Length: 435
Image 1 (cartoon, rainbow, N blue to C red):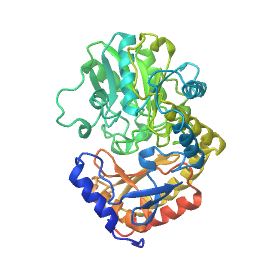
Image 2 (tube, rainbow, N blue to C red):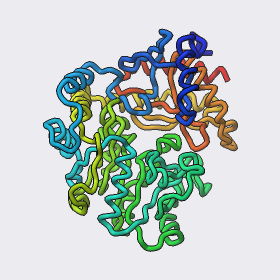
Image 3 (cartoon, one colour):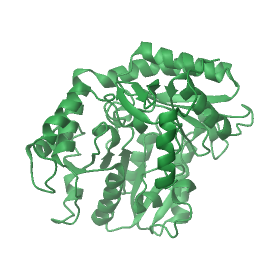
Image 4 (cartoon, rainbow, N blue to C red):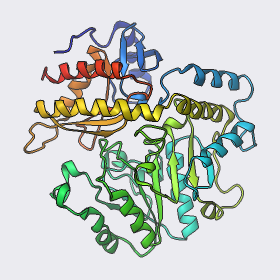
């Protein structure tokens, strides 16, 4: 069993947690009971002085690691010059937009800079409706595209939109290829991508013939790091083209090296019409972007879409530093190398541990799905939460996701070394064996 180093929360952490419990609404994501004080790379210290290995990246945000010196220097230098100027041009904005476009497939020749991932997905949906003159959009069971109204409406799980009243008109939902829990009770090896074939039936039953776009994540983050089988995403892109609807790829979570390539679309040679970016783009500084075809963005006139802090010079300076660090330190390659080692170790534990139903992932994004029984696959959310607490007490921070709250999120900063990863997995293995 992993050694328990500290009881949580510590006395100082408890003091601040009590303050938050009094003054902050209880609607944010439940986390282990500690209060962060500082961090460096993949190491975190709480306010009581306890050290941890961070396997969350602050929800897949700090891709270049916590407080990377080059990132901090760029932010510090820009903060002393200019923070925001709304839609005025700055050198940082121009350079960041140029570099992002140069990294894209040739069709994505416009960059619309924003502040959050929700803004990016909302913008993608809005512009797709304006360009096409249609109002319906397809999303997928388990999908998560943000917490603003339109993004919430397209969510494929109830937790995001429960009891918020009528949703945005034109939302159509289709099954996602969650092969571990196939909604059609089929086997991945012989299903023939039936869920893709079934999409025609969904449209036939649910659409009014006014379909504008389809929006999908390369892997579903909030649903439990669910990766579609090979060929599915390319098949969906071809389906969208055949039916003359726009293909929106939501890479808010999966971009900037997370899967072992700079962008997840590279794995399948995808050519989306609209690409949503966020989280790792600023590595802790709020920033987002909608990459788009200029023919689509030309449907908008001046002032019809904007963002108060989108493209602000501080975010752009941080983003430029992220791009430099990614390239200089070859972080996507490190994500692929260390991630392959980690997933292999987790697969070994999957074969050994009865409650670990499946370990899955790509690069440095992995999900450990807990079950009560490997035959019935009954979810085990109560075990998952206890696992988070025990890992934290032993010095490793992990998070929880999944449609049933039964998936552990493993997504460390991309600077993690094989040695650090091995130490974290040793701790996780000890915790697993303690159940």
